Length: 196
Length: 220
Image (tube, rainbow over all chains, first blue to last red; front, side):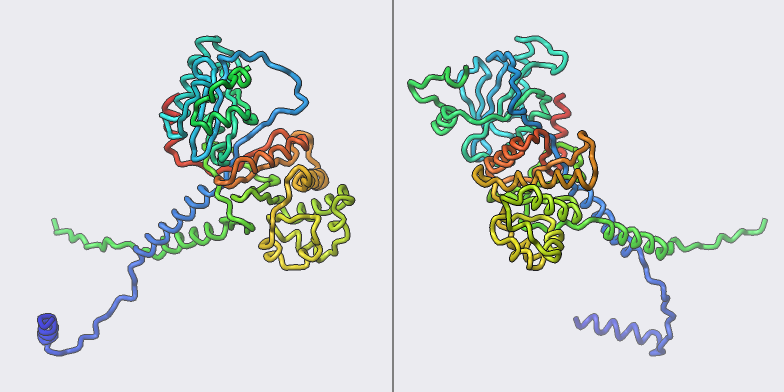
C-alpha cells in the first residue's frame, strides 16, 4: 500500500509538478456496447422463435364408424401408460398378457426399441403394406396415474417410429389389475378376455 | 527513389454507427416480439418433435389440476361467441342472456377465461378484466353439466359468422394441456369434443430439444 503511494508521488515529481492540461479524447470506445447489443439481439431472436408453441395433430375415430377391420392378434402391440413415466407393454410375442413388461420413454432403449422390433416382426409375418409400410397396430391405453405428458410422449414415439396405425383406447379392468400387480396376471384370471 | 513514408493508420474503427444499428435492431426485436398472453394459470407445455404451427384456434387449456379454460383468438371473436352462447343455449344459461354492453366488453378483454356459466356471471363480469381472469374457476366438463362443449360450439358458430369458412378451413380446436395434469382430464376434454363431432384437433406442445429428434433421425 505504501509503495503505491510513493510511486504515485514520484511519478508526479518527474513532470516537475506541472499540471499538464492533457487533452482527453471525447471518443468513447463503443466496442463493448456493440458486443452487448448484439448479445441481446441474439438472445431475443432465439427466445422468441423457440417459445413458439407447436402443435401435433390428433384424430379420434368417429363413434358411428361401424367399419370393422380384421385384425390379427400378432399385429397388435398394447402399450399401457402407468404412473411415474412407466410404460407397460404386451403383445411382443403371442399377444398374451402374461408377458406384460415394463419399460420407459428413455431414448433408444425404451419403448422406441420395442416398437421398432415389433414393426420388423410384424413385417416379417404379415408382409409389406403399400400404404402403411408395416401392419403393426398399437393400442394405447392410459392406466391410473398417467400424466398428459406421457400421452404426448407416446404420440411422439408413434411419429418417430413412423407407426401409422394406432388408437387411444380405454383401459380394460384386468389390465389395470395386472399393472397394479406389477405385471403379473392374477392367478386364475382369464387372459382371453383381453386379447380376444 | 525517395523514401515513401507510410502513414501509420489507427486500427481502431469508429463503432458509433455499428452501435446505432445494433440498438435499432434490438429495439425492433423487443417491440415486435409478442408478449405472452395473460392466463389465469400457468401451463407447462409438454415437449414433442412436432412442428405444425397453429395460428388461429380455439384453445382449450387444461391446467395441472385438471380444470379447463377456453381461449378464443380475438376480442371480436369472444364477443361473438358470447352472443352465440346466449342465442343458442339461452335456456341452459339464462345468466348469459341479459348482459349489459359493459359486461360484454369486460368479457371480451379476458383472453383466457374459465367460469361456470350457471353461477351469477353478471356480477363477475362487472369486475375488471384482470380480476375476472384471476377468479377463473374452470369450465365444468363433467358429463352431467358439460359447459365446455357448449362454449366450443358457440366458438364454431362465431367462426362461421366472422370468417365465413368453408367446411375445410373451419377454425381448429387445440388442446393446451399442462404436462403434469392427469391424462384423464385431457381425455375428458377429448370426449367432449368427439361428442360434438369434432374428431380432428391439435395438441399444443413445445419443441423438444434436438437430441431425441436427432437420435430418431439417425435410426431411420
